[in-house]
Image (cartoon, rainbow, N blue to C red; front, side, top):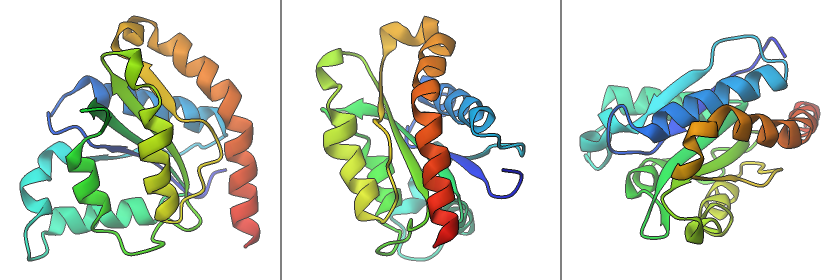
Amino acid sequence: MSGGNVVALVGNPRSGSRTLAVAVEAAETLAKHIGHDAPVELVDLSALGPHLLSPSPFPDVEVALELVTEADVIVVASPTYKGTYAGLLKAFLDRLPSQALVGTVALPLLVMGDARHALAVEVHLRPLLVELGAVVPTPGLALVEADLPRLPEVLERWHTAVAPQVRAALTDAAKV
């Protein structure tokens, strides 16, 4: 898959967050699993937060929106706040037009302090991505902070399970 691109979209308002590190590693290892040979692109919303609600366009936000809408695969990562994804991520995704992610394969990923919030990735984040037209062919990853020391192992297990579905979805999208 030398053409196309993989983007990590990070909705944590804190720069340098654990969510950022997890998203980058998840996107990079997924890219390897699906045979993607270009560098993974990053959209880190922590720097864009003050500009997301501005009524006038901000160039960096426009570039970020373009990267996301032109992605073949996006890993959409957020910390879990109040049992769902961060409002920063929602504010960014709300700027996309209806069906902006048609033809894009999206993988939702939530980093959480407590496993009680594990369903949030499927109940809250997946429907948002589907509403935008993305194909979400796999279970999302609900990553509990206690699993961060084992991140490579957790991601390897997840990617081994999801990579065949992602490749199939990309093949199907190419036929359309």
